[in-house]
Length: 50
Image 1 (cartoon, one colour):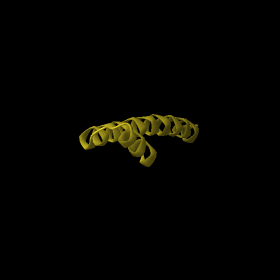
Image 2 (cartoon, one colour):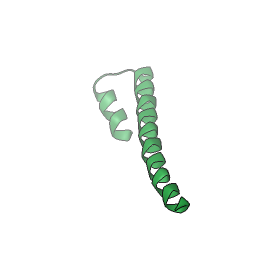
Image 3 (cartoon, helix red, strand yellow):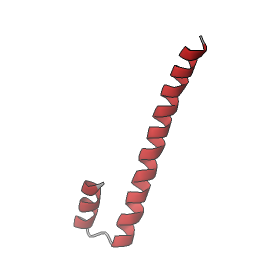
Image 4 (cartoon, one colour):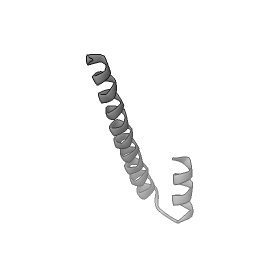
């Protein structure tokens, strides 16, 4: 996130734009992590049930 903020500031983006884009980055990373963890949990629960 630090690198993203630095690059956005170097591109001349305003403070509000940087905050919004970093929030969007956090949402996307959160969604990816949730999808990954749900997949792992599904595999583990199938192993427990058997």
